[in-house]
Image (cartoon, rainbow, N blue to C red; front, side):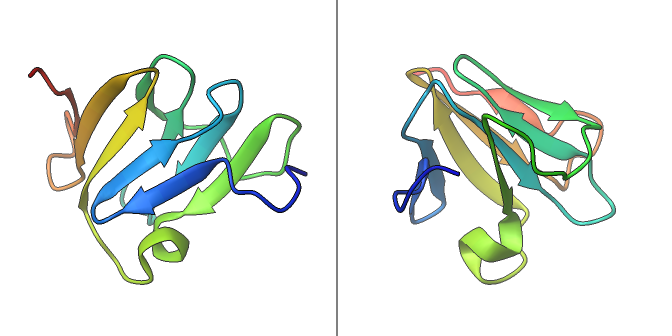
Length: 96
């Protein structure tokens, strides 16, 4: 769908969306909603994990090779902290 190059990269606990014209749906475990990373934002979504044009579906287990609940997502020049321990409000825009 995207050729051989992934539309994201992982460095430590940070996921960087490399092609901002694509959308990345991070699929979390059953306790959490999915995380939609788009050009300018990161948000929780109830979007099902299905293949669709323009989306890359990624499970957190695939990215980190183990279950993590705390990481950063960088998209559109903004870095977001995602901490799934806080189920009511897990996404925070980082201010530097």
